[in-house]
Image (cartoon, rainbow, N blue to C red; front, side, top):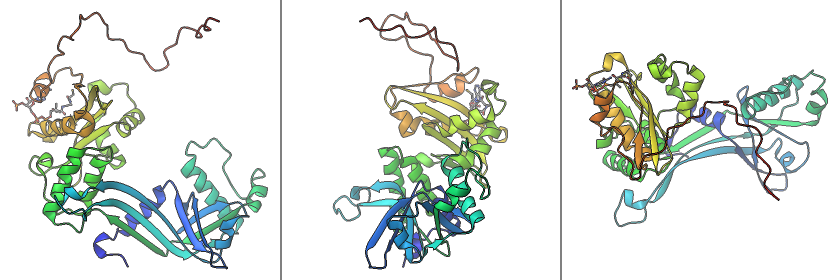
Length: 362
Ligand SMILES: CC(C)(COP(=O)(O)OP(=O)(O)OC[C@H]1O[C@@H](n2cnc3c(N)ncnc32)[C@H](O)[C@@H]1OP(=O)(O)O)[C@@H](O)C(=O)NCCC(=O)NCCS
């Protein structure tokens, strides 16, 4: 039985299962031989469903108890994050979900077609195929020949191991050390640990202006809020909502601030090559929150983000906020340590190239 402190809320467990890139399916056949397989799974009609060829080992699991599970590694936590001497606290933080049940065959053609259509929508979201229905001549025969099976989600068990067993002070120290370590997944780990244990005291790098909460890793759930702040800004004229969404999801660092109701009131993002250059883009604070230090707090956090602080130079363009950025250490470019003879060039999407590459000499 799970320790209660690690139990994941049901909705979160379902969301983790629904977003899993793959699922492990394990059980034993009639002769007691263990079978383990990795499959693509989708949740359809309250069950985790798979498809397979109607031959092979998976058949041995049909009508038998199975466990299907998936997991996401969040962060490796070295022992010294917690104890300077003992190796025992070394651990891994992760999120995992298990489904226990009997693997049932799905034989009704319309139900089979819904599972296959859901698999296509999940793993080939661009479409580019004739939609799958049970009576379409393209699919009728294939549907008859495929095995579709599912495990009802009646016994779903999610676990998130994110330091809930540590004291609040130990967790605050873990947040600080994750931020200092700065591996690619560490900012997200910080947010997951805070969400799992909201009583964790704030380490200094997360100190926020009154009434606000700084976040070191925004995600898809923040896109609408960010677009509301950025749409129509002078530098975004001509950028579609879709371009704004993709640029945020593709950023190497995306930080912000939420108010007490969870609304995003400030956002800033950066791209970085992790060594030479980082570029800050799309800094905005909600008009009602301006002049209160929120912009400074968010840009300072962005510059301290592991992806950005790893770069030797951080660049940005601004039309009128030089004074705002000046306080954060930004200044007009210094002359390079060589005679400046280069020009800034840029290439617009789809700009024509000048003909084919000439063949190399014999
Ligand atoms: C620029 C912006 C992010 C600043 O956020 P903020 O939360 O108001 O800033 P802070 O409260 O931390 O800092 C305010 C200080 O910066 C200065 N400042 C703010 N915007 C400025 C601007 N456009 N130009 C020069 N100084 C500016 C303020 O005068 C203030 O100085 P003061 O403390 O001496 O009065 C915010 O005004 C904003 O979202 N503007 C619209 C979007 C934008 O222009 N983004 C920057 C694009 S490069």
